[in-house]
Image (cartoon, rainbow, N blue to C red; front, side, top):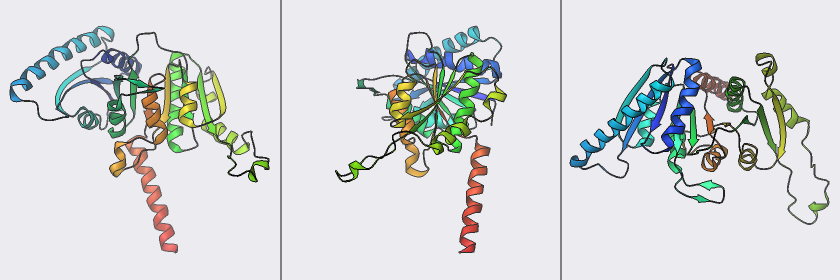
Length: 303
């Protein structure tokens, strides 16, 4: 993995929040910052007469962004690139091998708790690695980091990312495991004494997810929560006003690569605060795939 972070820029006001977040993440890690402005050609090829002017405008805006980035973090190595094409595919390709891709979320509208900014969700789904989506906000950053836990390897990677961010900012980390009670189907089953409290297995998943954090981050204020409810709704509620919400992505390959896992998809559309969608590093993913393949091979040979 390259020691760099890619920041997708569009010339919109959302760029400021995304770049500010990215520089704050890159500075203590001494990561190189790759500022990328994509001239949007999603809905058809730009006429030749306008392509040059669109690119020139993008280069002018990007030069201002670079100057601002250098002013904020003069010690970082800053690169800049203007591309033409689909921002979704162009940024996904550019971010291959990078530690992180950071983009802004431009809300086109809102229905209930959902913002219609599907471009950010599409980019997060197509990117090969971890993505941070920063909403368009004018107020100061929130406080605390929230992470969703479900017992998977991806959620463990999300916990590690969240713990490092919380410790760096000296703010509390809230780890949330969502459990659900069975719903009776008929009047007859309604008399069954359904469990209305999480059981020991739920508590074990949450405890194992944060095991070792106290030793690694002795000053970290850790809050463990077992919450009844749907993960997407619960995490959005708990993370309201937080500095960052971190989730693991359970997206699949093939056509489904255009969509995130159901929880992270809803979270990116809800955007209660900046959202980090964490995927394992390529080496980790390859190791897991190899282990799965070996297991499958062993099962078929013994059948």
